[in-house]
Image 1: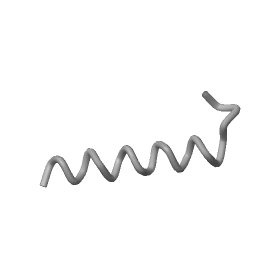
Image 2: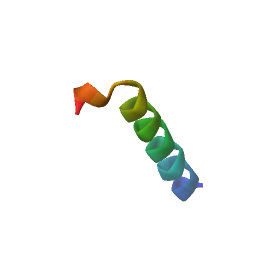
Image 3: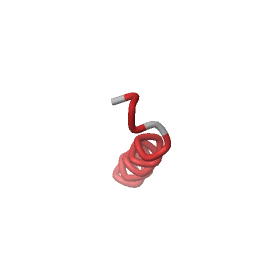
Image 4: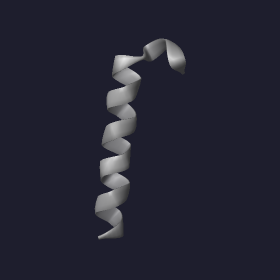
Length: 24
């Protein structure tokens, strides 16, 4: 489902933000 893909992408984006907070 497309919504599931968007949700997964958001989760990954947040995870990357947590790993690299200085990149934002």
